[in-house]
Image (cartoon, rainbow, N blue to C red; front, top):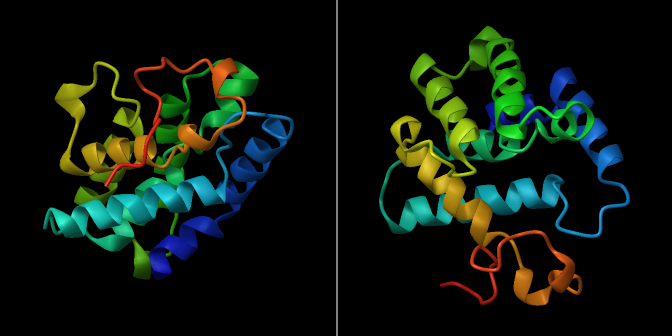
Length: 165
């Protein structure tokens, strides 16, 4: 998982991740932190294994670590976080050391997953990885345990109100 660790320790990633944590310091709803990113990665990887899709574990983890990285720009500048995340991720992915670069196809899939993980009118851009990240992002939310669920802005039909197997 050398490439995933290279993303996590990348200066640009650390900068945006730190800013995101500052933006969400007082947030009472689901946070977009490393626990969330890793939950999404693990769930997506399990789904990949169960469905025998054959997507690289590093590609899944890379997409999961990067899928919400643009949220600080959404909070601070109003840029949709998927759009901001694609720009940030593209810079990170193209500046990894040459010996551990993701292939052009892998980068394209990762960026498509970030762009479409919200699932809003992006069907034409969606990939198998996009669907995995989108599904895992949803399943990672534990709305059934949330003490502020009644105040949540999420549509109740989107809430994860039971454990899915």
